[in-house]
Image (cartoon, rainbow, N blue to C red; front, side, top):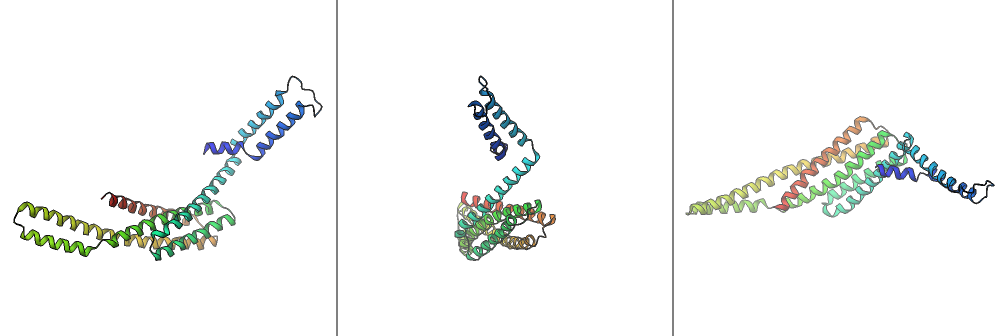
Length: 266
């Protein structure tokens, strides 16, 4: 950030203007275009011009107004970057989603776009800026969450609990007829593994149902905030709710990503 600020000060329009003006006057002095004889001191005007430019840069870097303007521009860049990233992720995510979730995702992104457009077109304020930023974070987190949710739901849909139950029953019968204790013990371990698998699948399905309900809650939250921000009724309470919503979605996304990694290792 400091390097960007220094670069901004170096290329600030007024500072560059001061440097160019100084160099132009120096050139005119050295070439006798102003009528002042500075023979033997030709380097002084140029050095003075550069020195004045450096002074202007230093004054910019110590100016509160410059800092505020720089930070504001950086924030606008960040918001535009987040806006583009959320739209890009949403576009690439559609191939992973069930059709109903494609429609839901489109609605969330459309709503996000209205909030962002309202911010860039309307009167700026710190509160509206923070709400827009949190909305973009929420949209990004929602896209990642809904993709992970649908991918895991597809995996669970392919898991046939009935087939596993049949395997458990078949192995239970084998174990009852097994005469060798070691064979019976091995079959018992296989049965326990299948029972644990069924338990895990059931737990994950219950968890996915909760996450689905949370996704619906987040969709409603974004829609509600759109109506509030377009009506200029944003508040600190609204910002707090958005921050909480972002944290909840991010936490759920982390859980699903971890489960996905564990499944791939298995």
